[in-house]
Image 1 (cartoon, helix red, strand yellow):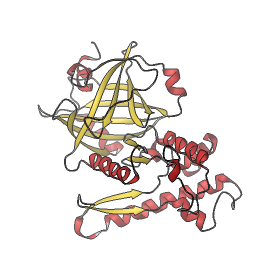
Image 2 (tube, helix red, strand yellow):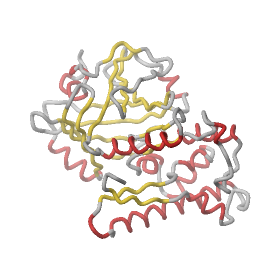
Image 3 (cartoon, one colour):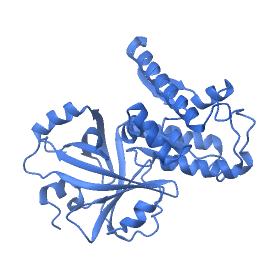
Image 4 (tube, one colour):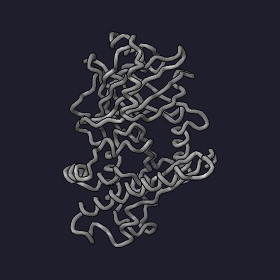
Amino acid sequence: MQLGYCVIFISETATELITGGISPRTLNTNYDFQRALLKLQLEREKIYEEAARALRGGEKVLIVCDRGAMDNKAYMTDDEFTRLMRELGMNETELRDKYDAVFHLVTAAKGAEEFYTLSNNKARTETVEQAAAMDDAIISAWTGHPHLRVIDNSSPFDRKIDRVIKEISVFLGEPEPYEIERKFLIGYPDIRLLEANPTCRRVEIIQTYLRSEKDEEVRVRQRGEAGHFIYFKTVKRTVTGTKRVEIESRLSKDEYLELLLDADTTKKQVRKTRYCLIHKNQYFEIDVYPFWNDKAIMEIELSDENEAVSFPDDITVIKEVTDDPIYKNSAIAAHGGAI
């Protein structure tokens, strides 16, 4: 990459197995294949990560997986996936969120059907209709990840790749670690509709603000579901209303607990239920707070300040509050949601 990264590429594991004679058709069951696929995927990722740490020269390293482990879920029933997680001693949050970011390139079978072909991959057998349905299932499997971006077919393929590279650069904070975010005050959403939506996932968040310098905002966050969590530390500094410098790092549970000792005691912990929602290939986050029963906050991260926002169906937007300090999470922590 021109940004100075050494890029390591992990090719698709399913293609390796299928072209080697191991497929759902040659094994006893699809479950046997998915188990073999996931175990090999995770082992390959482990080996590549170990090798990356041994690279000479101290280069910045970017590991790109052609497919991630959560793709398996789209090819299994919910019961099969739950069984496999139990068998491997894993959970969905751990498996999904082990990746720093997910960039989903929508299949040509959705919006660029004339370019959809089986000729470039002998392991691929889906019809256009099957490929489109499977693409929806894969997006659903990844929904809930902290950094999911969907790249559609609204541009020629070369431009599509440019968009992917731009999204990756923005995520990496290259050339600068900017976050472009818009925030909206919305009417209290219909929770039943959200939870029935296959492209929506519920996540529980506990956010604690730490003591910091005047121009900085430092927080730690516990994020997950069903008793399984990942942990982050985030440092933010505002540049403009929609643009902020943001530096985020993962924490172990022990690191997270240690940082809690440095909590800003003038602010309350913020507990919220987040609904991550894909709508027209844009990734929205709807935060529902326990102290509000008539409103909520909806956010979207953008790669460009001028990008148009297509609001989800059944959501009532009251007003944009991107520049309103009252609705910042740090302010909510200070006043306990009393607005």
